[in-house]
Image 1 (spheres, rainbow, N blue to C red):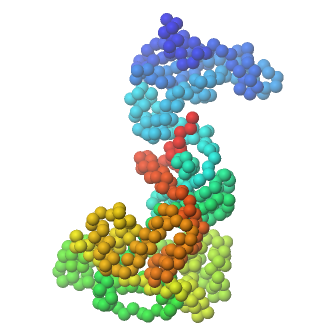
Image 2 (cartoon, rainbow, N blue to C red):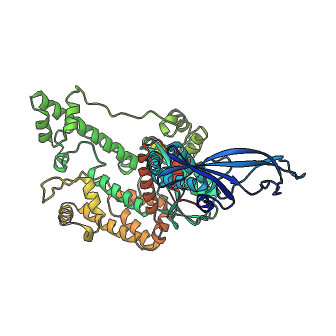
Image 3 (cartoon, rainbow, N blue to C red):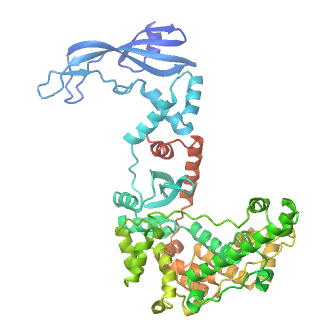
Length: 559
């Protein structure tokens, strides 16, 4: 009988006095046969004060819940150097102070919660004979992360943003690229907080990031000893977006064919721009906005005319080559709808428009001085926004003529939208598809993609030049030198293509990080993968998880 009872003992220093079946569970009665030691002074007590009963949950036995009812004692501490007078028995290896589950059950709860979450773990553990609520499971997961933080020394760190809500609220994820695991998760995307985080980790040598100015500023402030590396994926993505904007005329919402735009059919006469506006980035955007607005107005007039003539939605869409949604939306309006504008916020320059206009009138025309002034008044955006905001004032100011213009080797107007037909389907190749093909190596293409690339090359010398530059840039990122990068930027500026000139100009603003991207083997691909894992966990918990719970489930299990 004693041997049978000893099998049920959860620890060698505990005596099992009785095992019985109570309703649908096993009830184990145990008592401790060792004296208690004071947790402060360490002295062993010989004076018992009283007894009390602790009820603990334990691992199930063949699917049947097991409950431990332990008769524990309270003892008096007789040490004169100790402030504690009464102490309870400590049960190391079995249960922690004030806990209601044994350590081995708590470990199972944490493993289930880390892998499956709250309610799925609750359902699984009920089937296994261990009834625990989802709140207890999640509390156990978060508690273990707080008491056992990851303090491994990091050398190479990847930083990127993740979305609480797409386009509205963002957080920051930090990944150890050498160990390929999440180090920390921040609830916001702020340069000051990220800089403080870097200051607490002075061992960081390399920071891999995208080309966001926010993380660049945080790295400069918090980790000046680290080398910044621009992510190669984002560099290629920026190049692809540049090619798409160049081929599509900045992606106008409603486009006409290149022949129709060149001939000026149904288009109002465009005002001639002066040299500064024609060669400045802001003036080019202003001209393109005017062009898109005029194109939309012409298309709206055509839709209204066809609808008044009795054509159906489907017939209008087929005649004009549009989708049914804009036709359905526009025929119900008498005039063309205006594009919605966002209300000014402290992160936008328009919020401080009156102050900027007054400062400009008083003679403060240096963007860095204006930027410093609005920063002291609560501006939270980047340096580029006020520079673009005051650029039209500089163009109209004769004393500032050509101050923001392009260099002599960068004089190139924007091209017209490209109109090329897919030879295999007869459909137009969109600028997005053409941009993706422009940066894709030929050996990775399908037969249809090769045919499309050949058609694009035959139709546009501009596409041929951009593809040649894109292939060279892609090769640089896979193992180039700083000298080759400098030559590529020079060739891009002299290509006569406005988009490539603007891309090369943007690379110069972050040239050290771009050079490190060419020389260093590190990439932020592991960080992007962890963000995908984060999205999966967030959606599995219906988007209701706090940042503490997301951090606990993302970080690796610590023993």
